[in-house]
Length: 238
Image 1 (cartoon, one colour):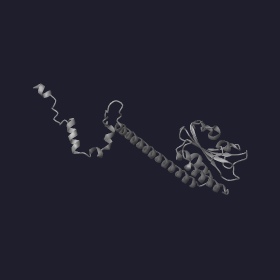
Image 2 (cartoon, rainbow, N blue to C red; image 1 turned 180 degrees about the vertical axis):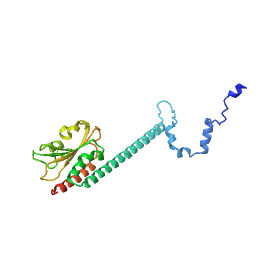
Image 3 (cartoon, rainbow, N blue to C red; image 1 turned 90 degrees about the vertical axis):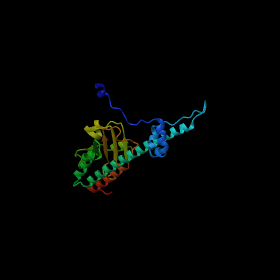
């Protein structure tokens, strides 16, 4: 009696064999076309035509699978890049709106040096202004750094925008935060013919946050808006 009580219940679920599967597929000829993902886990037959004869059909199927995987990977990269670009565009727009909302010049400059890092998801921003030793208005605001004449030209190398990866930040640009900077974007500002040369430096601790292969349209647009607002606040003709 105890043996009967301890005997596991019989599994009465139906079992399938190969012929059952074949018969079912014959009755549902459109099954694989409705579920093409199953083809990725199935191994197609490889015909044996004898020594020295290749089965091109087998290789064609394998090539098609590889091409499909490549297309899917490319599509995934396009979607990720598009999302990243949209995120960057949204951040730039928010930064510009905050610049426009500044109630006075000190708030305008503080937005660049203090608010831009969080708005643009970077670590440090410096506003660089050349001076020959004379007093430059608002030069003592936090994040604004005075440099000798010719420094902006030396750093920018006659380029309006420079993106650099895997670098060490310069004390002349970032001060005490230079040790954090592993990549940077340098944006030259043309405020006016009679105004001192200036630039904005965006620094990140991520060594690949800025790379030379990235597009510069958004940061260039930010630079154009910043230049015009500087001219407006300082009453400098465009």
